[in-house]
Length: 68
Image (cartoon, rainbow, N blue to C red; front, side, top):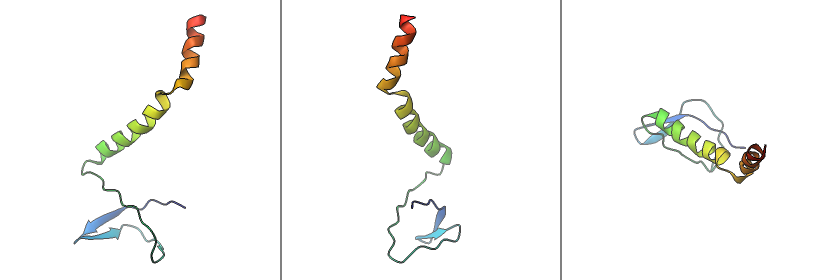
């Protein structure tokens, strides 16, 4: 199961902002967020939107609209 937890860095150590039971030896993925979080979320959203809007499946609808 994947779970996302908020944390901050203090004196070079990562401190979780909420309690969590993490088993010893668990593999952890750390993502650094820029100081301006809004830019991070805009970029993340853009990737998802590009995948949805830029696909060949929608070409079928464009062709149907042109033929009517």
